[in-house]
Image (cartoon, rainbow, N blue to C red; front, side, top):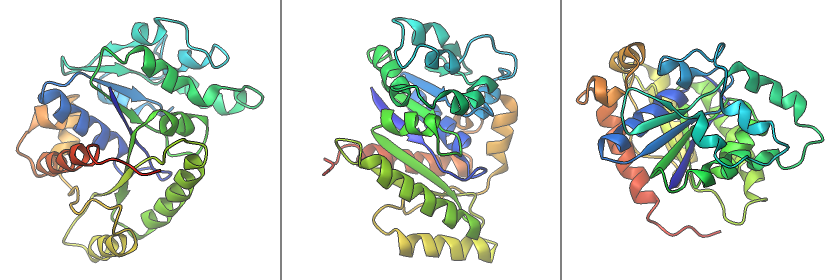
Length: 262
């Protein structure tokens, strides 16, 4: 299994859309994918038609055992989605209480890594949708992942959010045996606006080694896919947004073949 996390400490940048779009394209290629919703808002869970406010069981259950994960529990929590090759480990609003519970509890930062270890033979990929907040949930996502995708909206305030995320990653890397490779992905790009054009230029100038050279455009078909509860490639495989995500997936697959230097 390959584990990808999609994270940024700023909300509204396209994390959930990117997670589901990439998962959909992997599934379309015949890969078995588990998508993990670690955001208490449950956007990914809602996307696939489940209510994070009323789910009896969710990824929250994984954190109730003092850092250990009972054998078989992750598999019991999985739910079907619009695609036969994608299973969902859903979120619930109860995840929001973890930050209050976590002080004094050791081992909570590795719960998702331990959970995915139990699913290792059942899936080819895991894609984790992270909350826009540095805390125990984001730490879990980064600790479990082998590759990080950082969506960044092409507007000026998003650049500050990216700086915080890069600083967080540097902190996390100090506790990892190997630095976590990452790709910055410009999102919600609108070539008609000066803000998008100038922000894209700033991102490429400031992070030349780490930014994907493409971008995800503003595309109403992505929103339509969300409304329909299906992956973007299921909804319209030839839309501008899906074509951009296909190019991004090709980049990520190539990047994972490159040996990383700690």
